[in-house]
Structures are given as structure tokens and as C-alpha cells.
Image 1 (cartoon, rainbow, N blue to C red):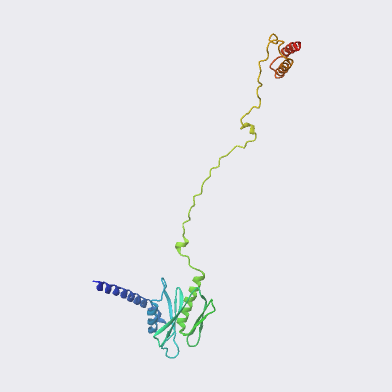
Image 2: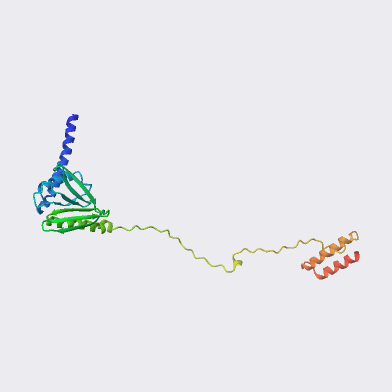
Length: 252
């Protein structure tokens, strides 16, 4: 049971790999219309199958074609993320891949010669890469695609979802203003406090009959002063004060 399951998983992986490979071959058939070598395209795509990053798509492939028989041609692959230089080694048994992302590329150049064209580009780190004997039609298309990618890098396209953004309304706290009346006369709002204290009236207004000779001179003088205060405060009349004064003076 375990072996059957293992075989099923292996078959599924191989099927997905083959499906992806043949799907890529179908998508790259359009590149065979500009004199690309079919064997070179097939060999490159079989190796690029494991090199492409997520969401990376091949834009164009240019294959070198020298005047004599080109057994192991160099190739240039441009994707939406980078430039890949493919150079066969060891009699075509292996291949070197050198890639440069578009943000590393300073500029691309194309020069048409009598026999094919030369496509080259420079990086921001002063690296010069050049592939010659590229068929003229392929060189024009790869140059156009490269310039489009560099232009997109400088002027990125804003998607419709990013353009249409619903503004977020931030609810502001509303502070109600209450009109207040300016106070000019503070006496209107301050409680009335009277500093007047009623004098304590000592019931000393006794009749002359109650005054006796038993009081000392000091007590009689104090009585007289008390009567004077009562007169000043308006508590007794002038006639009453004169009568008390006359009586006290007669006893002194």
C-alpha cells in the first residue's frame, strides 16, 4: 500500500513537471518565427523551467547565429524581472546562466552590422555585456522589450485598484461651544458680605437712681465712656447722655 502511494505521488510530480514544460514549449512557439534554432530554444526552456521565479514570465528569447555553422550558440532571455545570458559549456553538456535584474541595468544598446546585430547592455556597477551575431529581427524585438521594462521601472503603472481608493472618513470629536456672558461688574456675582458688626450694647443705661456712691472713681469713669460710645453709635439721645453725665460727675 505504501509503495502504491509513493508511486502515485511520484507520478503526480512528474506529470506536473511535464505539463509545465510542455505548456512553456507551447508558449514559446512564437519565438521560432524569427529564425531561432528550435534545438537551442528547447534546451534553454528545459533548463529555465527550474530557474524562473514566482510570477516571472519570459518576454523574448534571442539566439545567436554566426555566419558559419553555430553548434553551441549563446542566447539572451528577457523576462519581466531580469535579463538572463545563456552560454553553453563543455560541448553543450552544461550551460552557464548569468542574470541581471532590471534595476541593475543602466541602459541597453543595439548595433546593426552587415551580418546580424550586436545587443549589449551596461549595469550600474560598470559591467558591460555584449552578444554579437544576433539576427536583426530578434535584436530589434529584444531591444524593444528591454526598453519597455526599463521604462516600466522608471514609470510604474498604477493599477485601477490603487487608483480608486475609498477615502476613510475620520469622525472628528465635536466640541459644543457654550456662549458665556462677560462679567464686568464682579459685585453682581459675588455674595454680599457685610463687614459691619453690630456693637454689643451693654445694658448700662440704668437710671440715675441705680448709680450709688459705692462705685469707685475708675468705674464711674468707665461708665461715662460707655455712655459716650452709646451716644456716638446713636443708641441713646443727647439728652439722656447729658443726664447720665451730670449724675456721674456729681458722684465723682
